Length: 270
Image 1: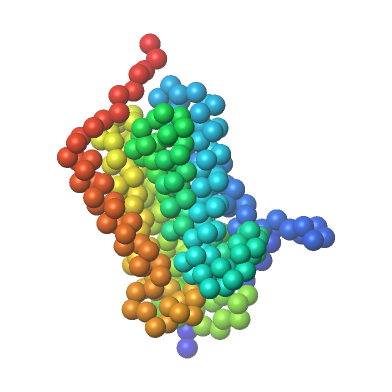
Image 2: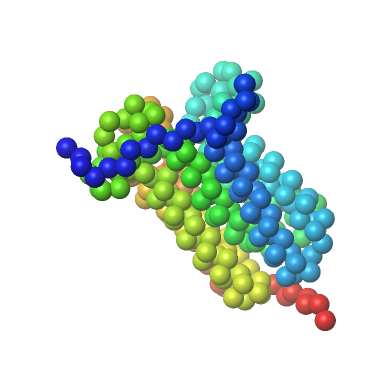
C-alpha cells in the first residue's frame, strides 16, 4: 500500500467556450516561443543585430519545430498508420509530437535560415540552443498538465497517481524529471553565454545541448512506460535509440569546437 502519493487530476483545459477550448499544453507551447523570443532579443541586442532578422528567425523556428515534431511522431512512432492515412499527419490538433523530430526540424530550419541570411550556421544554432533547452522545460510541464508521458509504478514519496487516466497506483512523474533537467541545462547555457558576452568558443552551446538534453532523455526513458506497443519487446525504446545519434553528434561537435577554438567577434557600440 502506498501512503505518500500525490493525486493528480488537473483539467488539461484552462477554459472552454462552446467547442473552443484553451489548453494548458497550448499555452505552455506558446510560452516557449514567447520566452525564446525575449531571450534571443537580448542576445541580438548584445550583438547589435537588427530585430527584423530575429523576426525572420522566429518564423523559421516555428515552422521547423511544428513540422519536425509532427513528422517525427508520425514517422518514428506510428509510421504504418500515418503512411496509410497521410491526411492524418496534418491533423496536429489531435496530438502527437516528438522532440527528436523537433530537433531535426530545428536543425534543418536553422541551416536554411543561415543560408538565406548569409550567417554562419554554428553561430545561429549555438544561440538558439539556449532557448531550445528552456522550451523543453515548458513542453514537459505541458505533458504533465495533460497527464501524459509518465513513468512506471513507483514507491517514491513523490509518486503521482494520474487519476484522469484511471490510474490507481503512483507512477514516476517523469515529465517533472525531464522539465527540471532541461531547466538546469538552460541555466547553464544561458550563464555561459553571458559570462563571455557571446564571445565563447563557437559550437560549445549546441554541443552541450545535444549531449546533456539527450543524455537526460536517454536515462529518464528507463523510468517511462512504453508510448507505443512495439516498444514492449525492445531493450531500448524508440526515444533512447533516437537519442544516441544526437549525443554522439554532440561529442563530435564538442571535439571539433575545442580543437578549432573559434570565437565570435562581436562589434560593440561605441
